[in-house]
Image (tube, rainbow, N blue to C red; front, side, top):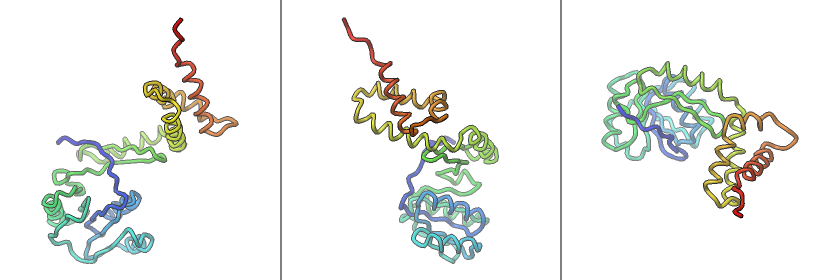
Length: 222
């Protein structure tokens, strides 16, 4: 199968999760981190669900009943995370009829969306997908990549975003802006600026940009 890697904006969107066990709980926790509004359906929930619902009363609604075929049009995404293959298949069929994206845990042939192994460094997110072939390999690769990305990378990304916004207003040449940002994003530049100094990281980035753009200026014609 062919897949297009994407990141979904779930802020404020309605998501259905079918299941009440440990796997469903992990899915719900991830969705809440993405600021989705989650409805979870299951005849029974593990105790952790009640604590999670109490902590997120406006974003998690528990429906204590078995899943039955229903109209999923109100939902942006559906997740089937039960140990009942028939229930999971029913969720996938309902999602297909409603043209709603669906993830069925461990059944990639029923999915229109695959879960990935991810990690975050501030605004930076890295996701690894194995096309449903071997999630364990995805998790291993995720961990290896995470070791190569220090936590401070998130701080650098945020500061670089602020510098990018400043450049949009102060450097009218898009090609020069692109070269400057490419320079700031390179590992050798990052490592040097992250080693610290008397100034803030934002000030260091600004100074580095000024130096680079000065060197990048073509000589005047005679």
